[in-house]
Image (cartoon, rainbow, N blue to C red; front, top):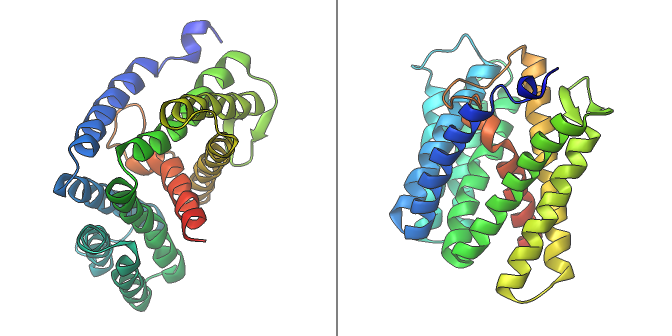
Length: 259
């Protein structure tokens, strides 16, 4: 493969990435109601993508889909008004309601909803309670893991990480992602409170979580026989394809904060 061939989708990915990053930066910098609105919309679209993958025969009139959308918005609004603990009420209620509809794979759909909606609510909480710097660090770690994996994997190549699930991912790209995430952690630690082994270790761990989330979504797509969750983002596929790592990393981060 030529050098150009390795990066045939790079220009489109960069343009889409810059647009997404710009929107997120403006919203998170501004704070307030824009944060829960953005995350509510993102969670709703990812719920549609997930349900579309798992139940391709179900139409937009399906009440389960709209229950997922309502659950996402209720979770982020509740977090914004009160705190993250209160968000578990609409999260659990929506999950039980989705399971009760009794389509095929009710447990898969309910768990998928929780996996999508909880980190959306958690990001609202992180922005409100921990500040802009923490949100940007968390997102930057995930982006670094993805970018490092993309470039190092295509330039270095080598043994595949898990070809049965994700044929393009290599061990070199995985390690490249970890290293770039450590660089982000190093910069964040310097900016916030000096060099901290804890921040470096957490950055490394969250990069691993992000890559695990990416693999999990790849497994679901292969299981369902689809290439992308949708085509909403040119060069990236769907929102789930772009933010699967962020959801996993945010979930792990909040579990560590809670316990």
